[in-house]
Length: 438
Picture (cartoon, helix red, strand yellow):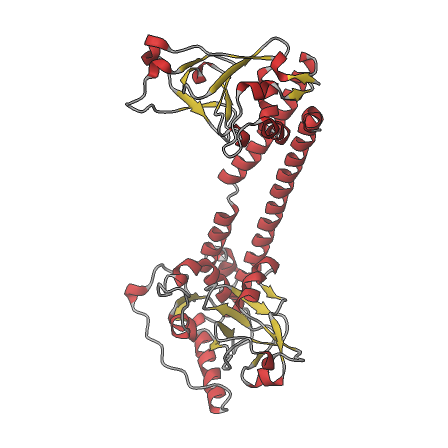
């Protein structure tokens, strides 16, 4: 182990009267280069220090969080604050090797051990010089530098490449947008010209609702406002139909009449799942399948609520507004959740869920500006929906699910690449610098 003071020297070169001719530079916490700054009109630049190529600059008050930079080329030379420490490397120590050490966890630990000051920690040059570091031969230093910088470059490439070309959240939104506009299934429509139209589907849904109302299995619904041409945001394919959410199926608010909602008398010895907004929100991490519940009602709890069947789509209308998921088991839901069931067998619930996911931000804007944001059932049922024919709904859902699975696989590959590169970098840094923290 060597004492760092044997390989570095402090530089104190005042800018002097020629200061106006130099670039003013400061220190970046995140990057290993010295960044350009602006001087205050009140500053006396003649007191500032010169910074030459391959010299280091650090802020004594913030070096413990990485506020240190290397003027690696002429673009970063100039003058810097008189309050900063400026130093250079002697023969036998490559500045880039030292920079990687000082920016690593091992270097930051060594810096912390050598700071002075009870409250405001500072690292003076004497403290820096006291740090011990194993300094290999120059050829070994340069080999480690090359490995570290190669991995860092790979990490930057992964981050930038996947940010610019594979922006997954934006890609998913684009898929959903094309789905609800009918663009994903343009070829499907050409291959299936004779399918039941959405207009006919809406008639069948309404007829089934009338039957359920007559059988007293459904309460009469309030008529929904007709859609005017001015409300239509975009053109949809032939055979599709703009409608209100309430026209596409049955929306019913959950029931939890008793207050307080967490009264132990509702749950003691219970075995009937009670699903709340958090359970619905968590389902997005599991293919929108609701597989958790907040608690279990007993018969008392069930009596003041209602049991919805497995497969029911749930939509949150309070707290986490417009989160969606499908029950995988019969469950009760509170009045902060809306249930959606299609009276006609098909993929309508999945299609409606996709539309809600795409328009969640817009739906949330309907919530009044209160401490506990929420929307009501009327808002949900009056939202507009571009409804495809039933057969095309199935084709759209299948296509979107396949594309989303591709997105998930791509995301997993990206994360694996990032994790692998990060672990590899830590391994190289440990190989180079670990003994400095012992």
